[in-house]
Length: 396
Image 1 (tube, rainbow, N blue to C red):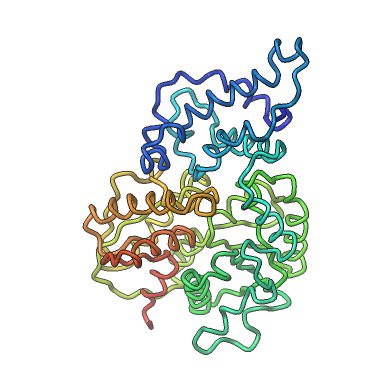
Image 2 (tube, rainbow, N blue to C red):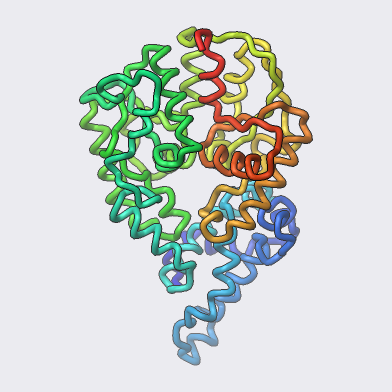
């Protein structure tokens, strides 16, 4: 393990923890597992112990060798059983940037060869197939063929004002493919000049961050930027919050970058989307990367409220205090049972609102919550905001 993986702020703030335990009280992994070893306070304590073993004065005087990977594996197991939702950072009274530390810690553990071996699969899939599922990247836009009366160009144009960056989950996972279909139909109804990148779209690189492989993202970034340049686009729209956050934080800002919920809000304000009246009560789930990550809270709610007849009720924990769905941080890959338990608790919270449907703005949230709902035959609709708006089009 190496201090080089941590910023100066990370190193200085590691000792600022007051052990108040608030991070454990809001941690979805702790709440679902009842295991305090998955909490931020435990993780910081263990990280400090590891650093003392590695870099403390006695380690230097005794010229101790590097910590063997096998002795780090129990700690590593707790580090990767985290959704990276950022709620611990949000609630920390001292203001420790915990999510940044967790990402740096994952890099540290990967470099120390103390990590879940499924991370190798993420690395190999993105390097070989350019998507997290190891599917043929030439099939990234095949969902267009399942639409009613798709255009001959399949939404892949040489030039366009807007690029819709689809993301891996929506491109390949059948349950999530309804999202790009819905957004494409909305764009058609609003006469948006848009294009897909098709096989030229590579994974945004976000899964590499969660896997502790941040240093391997630059090739992906360079490729995707060049693909957008060739389209001559001015705006990139993302329905995936993780793609959006990755671009906002790690890509050069050559283009306007906007989440689909924000773009829909813009189209509605410009009266470009005709909406019909609905008689339905819904609640809204703030995706972690869109809400706490990108601070986008208002636009999705304003889109929902703009649909005539719709009643919006709030979850007990909402906006910056929203509880994770269980789909973040690659957790489903590392511990599917824990991810499923987090999803169960989320669905119970949704049902407590009395809503007929839960609307979110993230394909991973849709997939995680819908998987639980379908497996357990819960009488609840789970929809992305693009699907909800498409259902509300006046001519649908």
